[in-house]
Image (cartoon, rainbow, N blue to C red; front, top):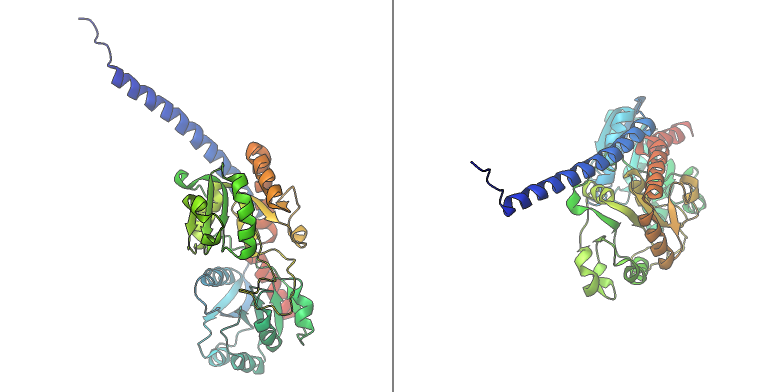
Length: 374
């Protein structure tokens, strides 16, 4: 009996299956290779936490989101590097806790919700106190009144070091925030959210000006923008389809988005935006923001506006790429999207540098050393 011919619909399904299988295997192989490279760097560069014989009393910001992820990351890291950690919130009776627990060091993050009389009481117990300011120089009208009450002041803005010293702070150190590697790390993001260019952050006016000029130059690319107030854009209706408006993103989905895009843009806040800042001293900002380290820890290419201190942390053109105008940004984005090997090599070098030098493990060890030995 003659063998029946296969129907066209069956042949079409079989061909589609073979194409899908071949494409899936190729994509899986490429993803696996990339994840393998990233994991090799993570294992090679990430610091190994060593517990120190110290008892830390950590006082959270008390501000909730978006500060709570910073608190969570610092607490988790302190538990890796300190033999004992006691956690308190600003509303607690800090003096009673300190008198009972006798920590070696009290560390407060931000400190705006922590009453100064509680700090004085801990100082009176002979316990060293440190504060780490997370938003300098944007709220220095407030922090200038807080800083002198602590034994040691840490600021993520280098230009604030002399500012606090002039206000009577005997010990002031520049300490960028860095990154909590437990949250920001290489990830195999879902293909449904993958794209080419990403920006996550609040639409401060300097960023609105940047994107008003930038978006027409990169709109042919697969874009993703997320954050508050992006309806300020001059042509918001035109760009609305790829804007996730009014959203504060937790670290995990932020890292997933960074990993899902080939290029992530970083744009620093302006020091002189008087609609939000409380910086009447008009201290200029020269140091990198925390996003600089978070993006780099996520194994993607970062395009950032240039601040003087970035060169202290990354080698431009090798570990990070800077831009000086919307047109320059667009041109460099085009270049690196067309030169995949160069893009990936920079991203990998940036990942290595970040894990080697800029994690919370490194930062908190520096903070403890400077406070306890100063």
